[in-house]
Image (cartoon, rainbow, N blue to C red; front, side, top):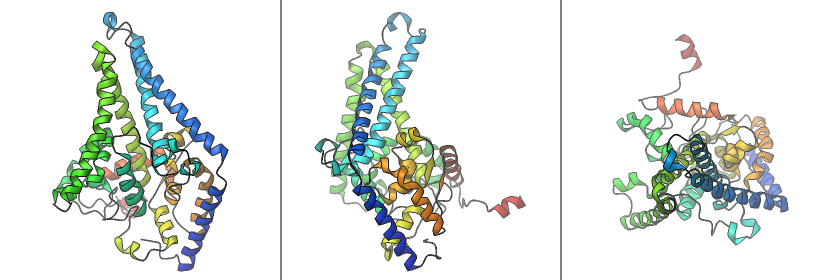
Length: 374
């Protein structure tokens, strides 16, 4: 719920100040921001090329030294890790943010939300609908935000328990490892399809589009690149698979830390029925969580470590979030609003513990008084 101590005048003031903050940042966008994204794209592409080159370099000498040459393991490990990092950069700090339209102001057709297709199983067009429209509009509203549990997990005690959730520890592992493929099917709304509530023609069209994108991704990583290795096909395939799994686990962890740690708020549909601009801002702040860390962590999370600021200003270039974060935190403090920001370890530990707790009926966190009483 929106905190009851906030008056209509408070909400109006919060809305006006955040609008002004966003307008100020937009007005100051310029050459430094353009140089940032262009440099990042160059780095990411060189990393992708370098990672694949290291994987192929590791194959030299394999016929006589398979499994016994330390250099092979060093090179293929470095290559796989470099390829995974390049995929993380492409998906998080570049793809996700370009598709949001954060860099449309540059009027560069090569870095524009209308044209960008990312290195991911989910078609950019479907991502714009499920993420940019549905999730960002109805953030943490039960029954409206389909990112709450992604249709298969219980992430808040406000979700009704079902025996299906007893398998939640297994769902955690599967979803983290294959997050890309789960997201590729997200717009299909499988629970509605199974209940017969989804138009069949529309569902088939979405499935065809997802299938084509998944096929292209699989063709690239699991057939064409491995074929270049000739007899070492399965070694290159395995390295590509490992890089994709590493990318998936990282993106799963970052996204779950953004909305599901302890202390985050969820909302009923009644909250949004008469929601003002200020009320929308407050819901975004209370329904999102930040991760504290250094600049490298922020870049590798796609600046979703500033999830609160991202949800306030989703189409503001991500390199500006660190700059406005202190002002947003001060505004929260001024109005007595929680600003959920902790280390990556604490946020992830909180998420995992909560998911395990909610495997069972109930699942509310014990109060301090109850915990103290034993």
